[in-house]
Length: 336
Length: 291
Image 1 (cartoon, rainbow over the protein chains, first blue to last red):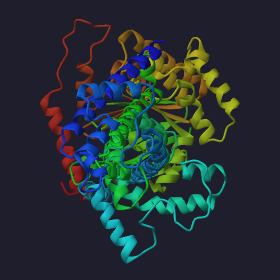
Image 2 (tube, helix red, strand yellow):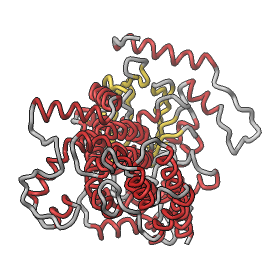
Image 3 (cartoon, each protein chain N blue to C red):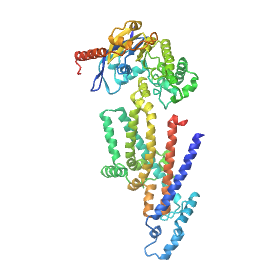
Image 4 (cartoon, each protein chain N blue to C red):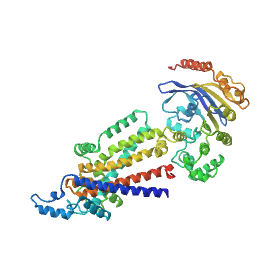
């Protein structure tokens, strides 16, 4: 009951947040210079042509009127038509979302695997040279942003030692016919593991670039929490029961030490998705981020609005999921 | 009479720092209770930790042997040592509030090790846990086994920990100040419970405490520790009637008794402390340690 009320409160907060985002985006992109209509017409178009097009897209009305019309449409599920691509925004955006989601989730998994492994090794070999090596590695990984890692990876594995693809989501020679936009998941469900392997190798470089800084933060925070937990009495008690140190770390300490890291992953994952905008561009990956940059270049106002709102919705949902996971993992919160 | 636990000349030091245990020897006979008394910092807990293989990494074993059930633990590789300890010994920890894993239900905290380490079936382990929880007089056992630690009181948690310590039928249990963190009214019940369980299961007990009153109630013999050194080892009734070492006498004089509740308590005199510290110094020089 209390849980349900908390959930409803959260959903209401989410709605208010999304409305705020909609307001900010709508007005912000309209005060930035640049006229979408001018971009559509060839040079030498008459004033009349411009005025006609502006009336067609509703740009002749006042800002407030435009906002009311647009938000009314949005509430009915209509995000308008893209100016540059001349297709419904919702169709375009939802068509690209799966690509970005798959990339982000792949990056998140890599980050958790790498970061978790580093934290585990640092804890197992604490107070030794191995722990210092972990600290140095994570420190270095953290001090370089994801787009620079992308350039490093492109240079190393795309140019000097070309083992991974650095361009595009699917190879043009791939004959597999996809019926959905979730390529990896679809290939997996249709048991075409050769296609899964192909897709994963295509997105491995961008995913790794996104994952490296997050892996470093996870490693640092998780190792710190684990080391503190290893001093606690119940961990000592587990040692006297004959469990190996690996078991003690993973089964006794980890479930209690992981909570702060989980919150951190939630926050950082939204940053990671933000990072896809540049990373997708660098790797010519056909996702939302790449589309966002094109939309901005073309001053495609309806498309920009649609993408930003979708990103905002994604972030709030991720935060909600993290909070709920927290309750599941920490029995004390269940009664609170 | 077999010496179930036999510690010989155990010397510990802080890595790169001072010596904290000076060639300590003590024996616990199977089925008996041996008390380990001393003030804070005397090193009594370190002996317990050395026996159970839970010494902090900052502490280094300089020499000595710890024989547990015929095996020198210190001569074993770490993995085997831990396994051996898990099979033959157990710990009743000091603070029941922190000694149970907060994210796990109580039942599995007793049964998991029986299943994981000793290869019991789940139903055997559950049955065993229920029997033990009944022996430590826990009411409503199915509910308690499903509870998380924060849902139980301190006294209940200590009972759970006692049951858990006896779960694998260890031959030795180290009780590290098991009543210090508890309410005075609960302390007595828990002490009685430990004695009762020990007798029923025929387990030897190494009882670490700073409370001579507790020792007089539960122990068959004791070692008095001061500044990392055993200053006196004695059988039970004799110690309280005729303590030999000056520090033991001073310690007894500093303990209130029921017989003479108004009698003045004597602080441990400074010359006694100096004597022991000088002994330590001589001992270190004889052993060739760098002090």
